[in-house]
Image (cartoon, helix red, strand yellow):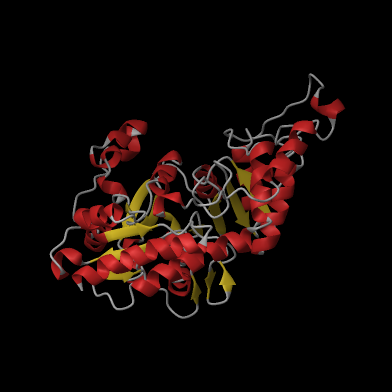
Length: 405
C-alpha cells in the first residue's frame, strides 16, 4: 500500500551517541564546551575556509555577517526578490534598508543584469542567495561588487556541497551563511554557521553572537579560559555590543553527527530530484529550475515552474489537489516576494527606526519577474531517504502528467 511506505528518519547516524556524551560531560555551554568548537572546525574544513563560527540559526548568521562587513544604520543592502524574508529581516536587524533585485526567469536567482543599476553610495553589501541549492552567477556578481568595493555575503541556507564552476559555495564571497534548521541538508532543529577566510570578520561575528565578550577570538568561542582572571571582581568582560546567538552543545552534537554523513544526505536529495526531473522530461508545463553546465545543485528542494494554467487549463491549486488525491506528496508554493509580506507592505517595519525608514516604501510591480515566477513555482520534496518511495511518488506525478499531455 502507498500509505504503508514511510520515509526513514534523517537521524540515523551518531546523533544519540553524541547527545549522550554531551549529557555525560562537564559543560553543556558553548562558552566552555568542545562540541561547538569541533563542529566549527570540521565544517569549515569540509567546505574549505579558515574560520567557522556557529550560531543558533541561519538568520542570526545573516545579521552577524552584515554587521561584520560594516553595514550600519541607513545603509542599503541588495538581496534577490525571490527568497525567504530572513534576508530582509536580517537587514532590518542591522538598521539598514533592503533593496530588491529582480531574478532570472530560468534560474530563479538574482539577475546580474539588473544588479548594477541598484547600487548607490549607500550600498554596503550584496546578499547572493543560492535558491534551492543552485549557485547564482558569481563571476558577474563579484565583478560588479569588486568594481564598487562592496562585500558579497553568500546566503547558502539551502546549499551544502553545491558548486559554482569548481568552487564550493561558502568559499566564493567575502563571508558565507549556512542554516542547519530542521528541513535543511544538515539538520539539528535550529542552527547556523558563518564561514570566512577573513579573521576580522570571523572575530566580529563571534563577538556579536556571544554578548560581546572581549576575549572571544576568530577561532575560539570559549570565554572562561582563565578562571582566576574571569572570576576576579575587577575583570571587565565586554568590549563590543553583542547578542546571544550562540549554538548550544546539544545542537552542535546533532549537527556534527549529520556532518559526518553530509555526502550521503546531499546525494539522496540530488538523486530524488533527478527521479522527479526524469518524469518531467517530455512535459511542457512543468519546467525545472535551470542548472547550467559548471553548476552543481544540492537540491534542498526541486524548484519547478508550473505553466499548466495556460498550457492545459488546470490551476496550480487544482493540479496539486489531484496529485495528492492520487497518493502524491504534494508540493509547496514559494514564499511571497518579501516586500509584499504584510510586515513590509503595511510598513510595520518602520516602527523599528522611523528616522531611517519613514520615507522607505515598496510597491507591487517593483520586481515583476520575481512576482510572476513566485506564483508559478512548485517546491517539490527532495528529502526522501528511501529511493523506492521517491520513485513511487514520481510515478504518480508521471501518471498525472500523462493524463493531460
